Amino acid sequence: MGNSLALRLQAYTRLSKDDLAAIERISSRGLREVGARRDLVREGDPPRFVNLILDGWACRYKMLPDGRRQIVGLFIPGDLCDMNIYILKEMDHNIGAITNLRVAEVGRDDFERLMIEYPRITQALFWDELVTVAIQREWTLNLGQRTAYERIAHLLCEMFLRLRTVRLTDGDRCPFPLTQVDIADASGLTAVHVNRTLQELRRDGLIELQSKTLTIPSLRALKAAAMFNDNYLHLDHEGAHLDAND
Picture 1: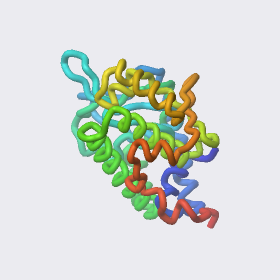
Picture 2: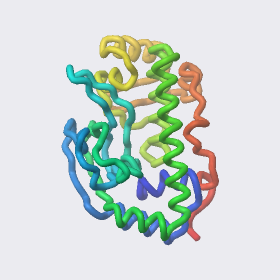
Picture 3: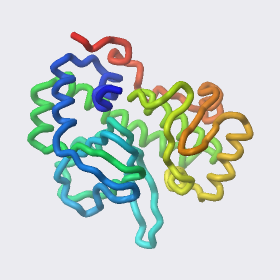
Picture 4: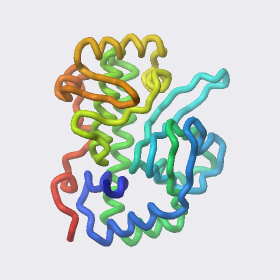
């Protein structure tokens, strides 16, 4: 399957064998297992590591005092949880495991050395940060303007394409471990509304969702239903088209 971080970064720029070896090294240090539905990082914690998701899904979320939760981001293999986290004195949000997680905790010195010694990796990481911000803008647009049907269709398109980038899709299928409550918390809807909307998407032949597996018979049709334009994911740069063997 390849190193997920390397696959993700190669969507933005071409990486050499030395670059790929450096990514492999930081991906194999400070390994940590986190159980499903447990917090990886909590609001108020002092940031100690850059967390790299190696396996599993996680989410960035905020909580209100009465227990209401808003998911503001999703993490899949190859994602870094806050590249510049050392700037903060304490975390201002939570990162929670959706599934069982395997994480590499990258220390500050190791991460800074990586960025100094490998400029192509640094360039790719900057692209990745810009895409993270672009995703956040798109989620804001979802909450402010898209209908429930469009919001959920858009989320499904986005996650499918992100998973395909790190080779975690199988034809028109991909893992999809989010519960209806997770989708509700990410889309600003109730779980009942999410259930009804997923049924509509199924009836329209746009998705199949069973046993934590999502099937999209026609990605083009689902994109049209969501008014989805994938330009914000910036997946058409040189790394997407070139072999990184030299």
